[in-house]
Amino acid sequence: MLITHKFPPFERYENNPIISRDDIPYPCNTVFNAAACRCMGKYILLLRVEDLAGRSHLTLARSNDGINFQVDDRPWVMPSEDPLYEPYERYGVEDPRITAIEGAYYITYTAFGPYGVRVGIGKTNDFSTFERLCLATDVDNKDGVLFPEKIGGKYVMLTRPGGFAGKRGDIWISFSPDLEHWGGSRVLMTPSPGGWGSQKLGACTPPIKTEDGWLVFYHGVKPTGSGRIYRIGAMLLDLEKPYTIRGYTSHFIFAPEMDYERIGDVPNVVFPCGAILEEDGTIKMYYGVSDTAIALATVNVQDVLSACR
Image (tube, rainbow, N blue to C red):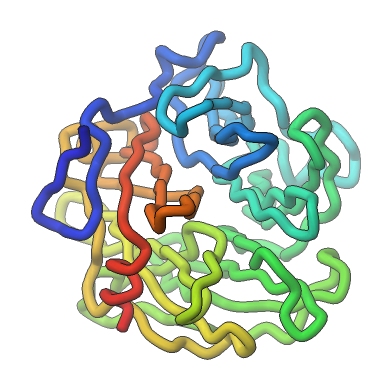
């Protein structure tokens, strides 16, 4: 059974959250912000797990139905000890996203170290082994999501440089011939002063290809007297010119409402990192709640497209 609340068109799974720290088979503080995909007939979640020392790593979970997940008994991606990566991942690896491109699965993640945060890119073919490809950005930059195919012969990525220490953060788009060297960058979307995402924006989930354009969920952050609120909007990008916005939601379409979304280590946060489009047009959106657990909501893709128009 799904529960509908006052911000349509999403429906929350009635037994949310679907994964909490009690489901992690080893000691940890929290689990949240999971990437998602389908692979070899199973749903895959790549969980951000924060350990008891405060560092994050990535752990896999698998499911036959996209609701009931079995979490691996050990981490899959730990902060690297390779001298090329170690200084930049020393404090953790965070907030992954998974994009399938040409038969492989590419994972973007936030590398967090003493010099700030950067977007890292890794690769797997079967979620058995993980290969780091590069640190794709300088500091401070995060919320990296890859498009699921080349456009104009180039890989395309959205990121969010800046947005720290109360400063404004915009969504940018960049291009690469090889997934390592990125350029041609330009601003894609900026916060609206006084709006629901007035402080900073960031891409949440990898783009979903539709007839109307590339559908992207993004978060907006608004400061309030009692802290920040993270809410969700959506935008449509041109299929051939993804730096062109064809439409976007004029207001947020998903927001913290339930107790599990309002109470936690970081309250008033809904933060998707994974969205799976089913054959019937339903999108399964997996989202972190208050940096404390993982929840599931569903929505019909046509309803989101209509909201963007």
